[in-house]
Structure formats: structure tokens, C-alpha cells
Length: 147
Image (cartoon, rainbow, N blue to C red; front, top):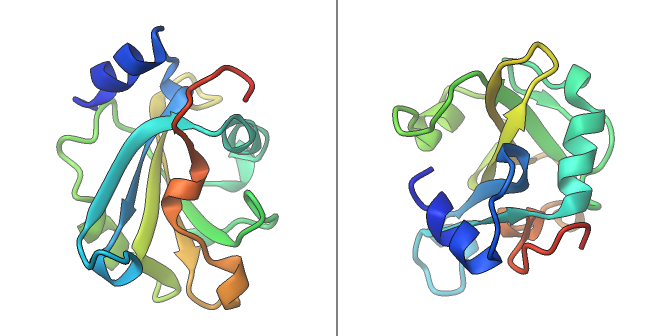
């Protein structure tokens, strides 16, 4: 991510791959009626959740069995070093009709097989309204370790 250096500068330290992510909220999910992108640290509870549940997240979209940060998400993985060649909107369009195209997050990852990549998360449209949340809820702007 090109914006990584700005997040690291604000955090005052080098960040591990799985400590940083990007959240995208569409105009339909924003009060300002504009596409909104956040790049920040991942909330530690989210990073821990993804590390512990890595075996249930694969290259195909599938619902996470447990709630993440109290909400229902579908997830997939991308084995790629950078997102520059990936269009997250097209990735969602190729996914299930259960994906909320206005609320998604990409999280850096180091997989058990030693490869690096990303988790891609999206709200499950079949979830109750209380189980859907803005993707930025998975981020932590303070970037404090263990926060």
C-alpha cells in the first residue's frame, strides 16, 4: 500500500503487514454521500481473530463462522504482495450476492504457508441490520500496540 508510509509516520513506528488495512465505504453507506477510503492500523482484536481463524478463510468467498468485532462478515484471501493490480470493486462483483458492496476491508496477512497476501472482508447482506457495520470499525486510528 502506498499510503502505508503515512500510517507508519503517524504511528511513529514500523508496522507489521498484519497491522495495517484499508476500509472502503460506498456513497450509499456514508452520511456525506461520497465513496470513503480509510487506511489505518487494524484493531488488534481483528488481527488476532484473523490469525486464529486463518484455516477457515480461503480463496473463495465464504461466511465467517464466528462474528468479527460483533458483526457478520464474508471473507476471502488474496495471495499477492501488493494491491496495486487488484480492483476491490471487481473482486466484490465476482463474489456472492451476499456481499455488501459498500462495506469492505482489505487486511494485510502472512499466511501459514509462508506467503504474504491479504484478507478481504465484506458485510453479509443476509445478516440482520444490527450485524452489519462500516468496514472502518475494523480499524484502529490510534495504532497503539495491543489497544
